Image (cartoon, rainbow, N blue to C red; front, side):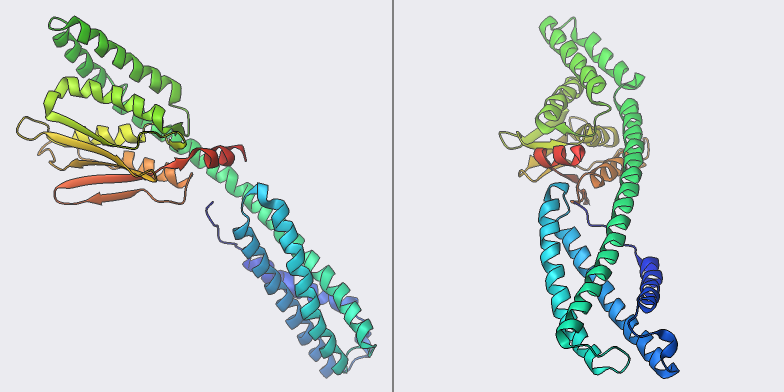
Length: 350
């Protein structure tokens, strides 16, 4: 899960002085009975105590939020937080009680009573600070979830728009039907297979165009049907190499990411008998890389990188691992992180 920066600047600026004022209102020594120099000293002392407690609690809060980010780890987080807070209060409270015993601005109780009183105040102080941070985190997380949800919807709409342009466009259908017209008189059986593959492509589009994630093995089946249509058109001039694991049982990806990358490779590169286009799909189980030899068309539609940016942004919503793009003089490659099936289901459910 991605770590988000805690924006609590104003909470600290307002919270510390406010708690100092509250402590003064409930002080053992009446404020009006103290000379001005002791009043200043007491305010400084209380401010330092509260600031130390606040910053200490803040460090603990951030550490535990990063260590136990998932909802299912809530009990572990609460237990660890309780132990750390008890140790923090006891250790720091001991030194506070010693300091209070030696200062003329506080009541001179016995050390055990002073220590007990300090523990009570420390517990209340840390409870107030913890509640403030928990509430801020809850509402911040809720606001972030709304933002990410809207962002995901926007990315999904862009993806569907790109998908419609690249796959269900009249241009794509026109080329497919032209290839079919040429094929029918020559090979009836291959024509039937071509129609089945074309049907599979459109069925997949209609089924998964609104999904956020998809099983990799399902996406690869669709990709092979999709590539079959192009290979019937370009023949041996389009070469596709698969260097993939035998199974992708626990792996997922985002729908049409592979298709978009291959579509871009076919769209922007020359494909001929003299210059065949070679597309390779390579995976080590952690990432999948789609690469092709670079032989850009001298004339044609200029790339806007909309599809690639869309893929990159959609992966950012699902994993902290980046999409990597490598461009050399002879090769173009994109590496996509593979998503764990179990963690993706947990993320969506929560």
